[in-house]
Length: 396
Ligand SMILES: Nc1nc2c(c(=O)[nH]1)N[C@H]1C(S)=C(S)[C@@H](COP(=O)(O)OP(=O)(O)OC[C@H]3O[C@@H](n4cnc5c(N)ncnc54)[C@H](O)[C@@H]3O)O[C@H]1N2
Ligand code: MOO
Ligand SMILES: [Mg+2]
Image 1 (cartoon, helix red, strand yellow):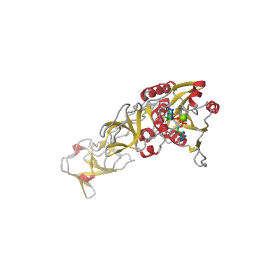
Image 2 (cartoon, rainbow, N blue to C red):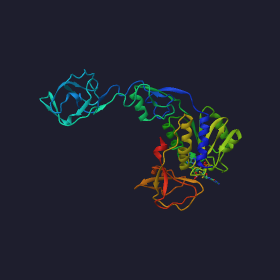
Image 3 (cartoon, rainbow, N blue to C red):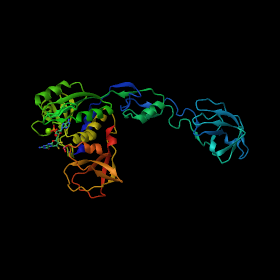
Image 4 (cartoon, helix red, strand yellow):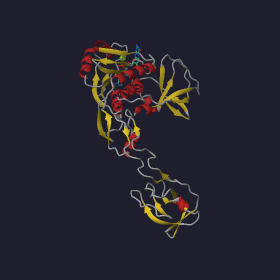
């Protein structure tokens, strides 16, 4: 199955079981969450015209082109000025309200101040110059952000500028993280013969937390069908079970079997590398995404499939990461029948790739800045165009 088809099906299923419950949280708590309301402005922003410069406000018609104007008031940000007396100017600072009657601000670098009292303007000026009009950012009643927007520092800054201290966001998605494998040991424990440390758990838990999920650490699951069934059955109250490993065709791969027996096995064998045996299904009605166990496969399939799924369940429409086209700075001779997502970087405007692209090598991703997409059946010469997906696009 092509990765686009799998993604489309996953997104359809996500949209069919949307998480609609929402909660009101403070702006700091809203970081990484999804907006559940339309954010409509209740004020004009800025609320009044204000100065973009430190300088002098005047009514342009009061200036004859040479006679200095007397300074009649000083206006700081935070003050409420008197109307500008006819034939005078006002000392004004950046962010301060423009006094009624003034239609122009000249920056102080362009004037000569005489006796601390009069200002000689030295250059032609235009009406409206250096004035930030009322409502230039937004006006009362205007929708500034829509429900389904993922909230980052910029969106939260915008909400704050409108005076919002809290927002309605979709409740946290509850995700159980399950690491399957008899060989796995948690870091900090001694390593016995045949064992390796569990790296996928911390990778996924950290990533899910950034996505605003409520992570249930379901621990390490031994490669055993009965235990797999029992463990999955205990996770009946989550929105998604996200597992790693145990999805291929080996004699110790039980996740697919458990889903087929007590639920539904929906996806199997994707035409991507790494990540071929990605599995999607249900266990007694609870959605399950089974990521392949190899760490780089876990990373790529989470980035390209599980993350968009989790965002769509919360109503986010824009779930696909930005890609850009870049010339390859490497040669690729082995045309594959799966789409490859190589761990790469941009150097001198060209994509280069980590020397070892084994799906068991997580260091490739630590070195990388992004995923270089090589289409099915393609070979590459240096300078051929490839797509590049920055890791920053998929990691937050
Ligand atoms: N005969 C075939 N064998 C395999 C195929 C195939 O098509 N035919 N596909 C290969 C591909 S591609 C992948 S990817 C792997 C995926 O296997 P599983 O998802 O079943 O994962 P495991 O077999 O359990 O583990 C694979 C690998 O990853 C290591 N691992 C697992 N979990 C963790 C963890 N939490 N932290 C660190 N490392 C982990 C595990 O020790 C294995 O080395 O199947 C191929 N086989
Ligand atoms: O597709 Mo597997 O994820 O390459 O190693
Ligand atoms: Mg396996």
